[in-house]
Image (tube, rainbow, N blue to C red):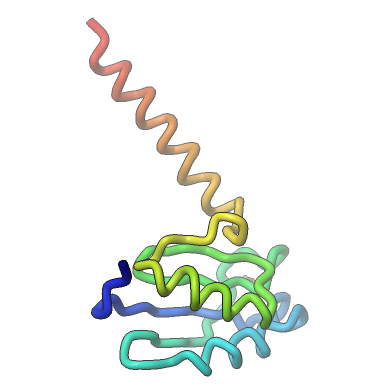
Length: 116
Ligand code: FES
């Protein structure tokens, strides 16, 4: 169930590579969804230029890649409407793979610490 008080910041990169791939239209589509709980902002390069347009959503720090204008409706209806649950198929694998790899190492390390 969605939390009506949840607030989001949506950052859409408008730097060179993302702009060449339609980031301006993506930003424009997100701006249609600005509200008391959704703030939309352009941002500078996020270091993911090869997989843009890059969109980051806070507070969860979710990274979406190759976002097209037609994806905006999906992100709003699925991510924002579900208390920030990321859309797995749209995640930037470079950013989210690193987190899951670390989680795996962290659990291995915990098991190592508990060994007698
Ligand atoms: S130009 Fe958008 S992430 Fe670098």
